[in-house]
Each structure stands twice: as C-alpha cells, then as structure tokens.
Image (cartoon, rainbow, N blue to C red; front, top):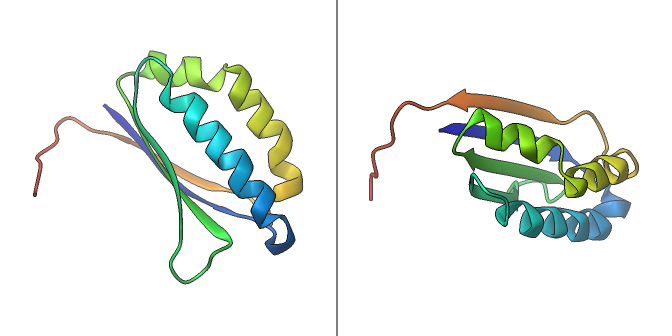
Length: 100
C-alpha cells in the first residue's frame, strides 16, 4: 500500500473556490480503481492550509490517477488557488495495524 500525505496553502481570497475544486477532485478520485482513501481537510490553526491524505493499492493505481482527466483539471486550477508550493510525502507501507 502507498500513502501520500501533504499540505497545500491556498490564497485566503480563493479559499471558497479551492474548497469546491478539492471536493470535486476528492469525489472523482474516490471512484478510481485502486484508491482506498482520498481526503482533504483543514489545519485547525490555519484554515488556508489544506491537508491531504491518500491511500493507494499499488504504484499502477497511483500512476493511473496522475494521468486522469480530473487530475489534469485540478493541476490547471491549482496555480491560481495556491499561495505557495505544495508539500507531499509518499510512504510505502508494508503493513497496517488498526489501533482502535
């Protein structure tokens, strides 16, 4: 399993549009084969910092995601919405233990 976690800072005046674009991206991505989880949320101290968390079954599923039409649409909208460069980390997970 692959996990992607990151942050995206959005321009305060573009926050409402950024939320709309993020929700659209989330809904389309959750319908993709191989996507186990895909969520945007907000930093509790900074409403203009979006947090993203993704789980993917495989490299192939993630590669298909990067080639999707909704990813292209998201990438086209991002420059006018973002206040800086996003930050993402990829984790290759060998096992998961449910804690609660």
